Length: 275
Image (cartoon, rainbow, N blue to C red):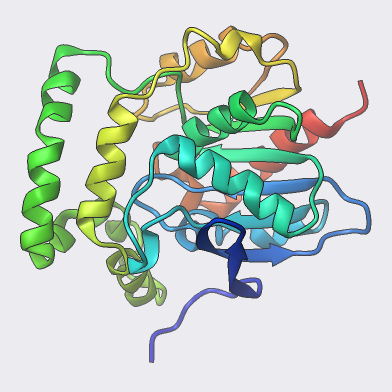
């Protein structure tokens, strides 16, 4: 039997006119600000946030939402559809104004959530993310191969599963959670991951992110090689009044509860503190 971490209750949540979304909830203190957690490209919502659920829930109402196509249900959506789904989740749960907390790709989705629904977002916490993910010539060339890679993965998903998330799995070496992490990653069709990677390669918020008019905090992974720290800091500089919260780690630092979670909580406090 696979041993997994302790997780909050989860369920598939029906949304009006949209595909159902798998969510987990921590009620938090009465009247606490509501965080909607938006996961990254390779990790599921559970894998991205399991180290942080409990600590966040002591101060905030916490909702994690899995993006379309993850978990083997349906197909990948656009980043814009994922942003709209986040607000639809808030609607279904009776959340008037939310704090969008996004990691990597989830950070791009959080930015779009504010842009498309500015009246519903009261704050942004953007972790290990950027205003864009395709900058260098090498990155453009890599992005150009994603469509073909996605098609190949649909024909041979077993091959794709050997590579998608392999870096994350290595972090669980010697851990009793390793079988759970492997199973969690294999719930997602690799073609869905590659479709989102292609969408992410076309994302750019540089022309509008300076208009953010809600409190924002940027968590900078100081040793990140996938989203270089200078891009993360540039995102913070582009948002008026954004606070910066460095954490000593690479792009997978979210799995290190001791290092990442306290910084994440600090960032969430920064966007909810009285002016």
